[in-house]
Length: 257
Image 1 (cartoon, one colour):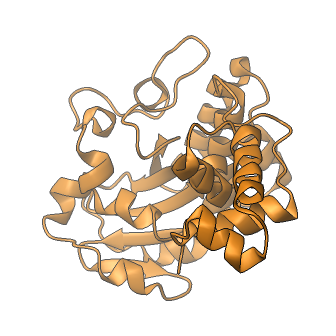
Image 2: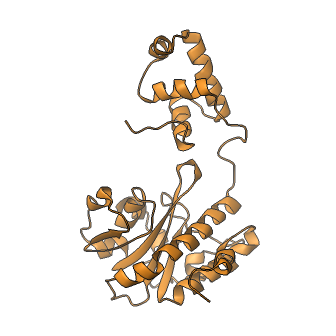
Image 3: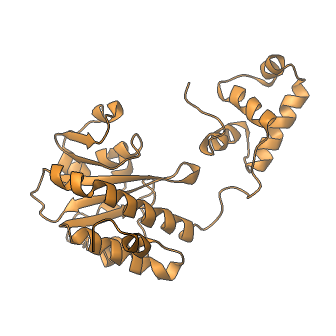
């Protein structure tokens, strides 16, 4: 079977909890055919790692990361200290990395600024192909593909051949896992904001007060408060700051000046 195929995509897609284990095994097998091991994370801010329908840790039970190795999912400092997870906050496309730096299809100046000191200890690998998975509501997942040959440090050829395909399979697996295993909906279904609500939140996001927004928009202060309150209700937010943050997560406004 070719590396990139619809059959592979379907094999790693999850539509029900009981399919998680089979999808994980499919992803594991695809990677193994090319001499790689899989290290999945559905949320880089959380040291917990994907589990099957019975709660078994897939990293150990399927992907083969055993207790005698450095079990990365139990490292509470990984989310903040690993250069791999740090890079996933600044890059959305697959990349490969070793102690010599990050390699991407297109240049990314933010990756160049990441500290790679003590790379192997902090990344828990000498080299890896990494797929960031940016999900709804600001969550970031990631899948690291590490060479089975633990002394291999140059993944140039592997990245050229496998990067795009691994990217598709990793995103499919993590995105569908999160959708199936989500314990609650982060936002109510009817959360579409109006034009006025978005306009008010855009000004609020850059620090304008209700009075300042009312003068800018030529509306009363009460009207501005009304629109921001309505937006908060729609987004299930508890205060002004969370309303702005959730609106940014959904793409209504930008927090970048």
